[in-house]
Length: 247
Image (cartoon, rainbow, N blue to C red):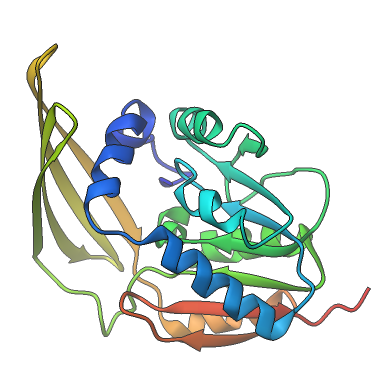
């Protein structure tokens, strides 16, 4: 869930348990999103049975997608995120790989890439490489569901977000500041974590997410042989693309 062309940020590299705790309490409704994905897929491919979640993180979408599809797998760049996902989902294959050039066996009726993870792929070139990789793993007539990062017209500048939460006996503060520069958001995130065993520790991450025009996404989907719809949601929206290949 970080840029394949840059070092993994600390939260992904070595603090996946902390990531899991934060998003379990920030109100992200993985079950609702999984149901929305399943409904959009069924409209286009009613018999879809297999799904690959790219940039699956700690497996929170997969946990719920597994109740909608017979066979699910995940893949993520960060070994520590994969560690948590495998522990959570003992019967689900979870691989380590780069969204731009992974190779795993089989083809899937559905490929998902959620939580705006595509923003880490490295701009338009990374988007094209990722979608080409997705297409190689997609069954004929299969469906790609991709959540983009924000478009130029919706990307805020100098945006601040803050949260404080208690999870078990640990209290976590997270504050972020995102600025627009050179076609991307550069986001600095500060964490302060307090728990009885370790006391108080603090660290900082930096994330760079590409801001890409909607038309460029649509062009990239067309280039890999997909018809694509854009579905508005509460966040950045969803691209839902169907492969034109029949065999």
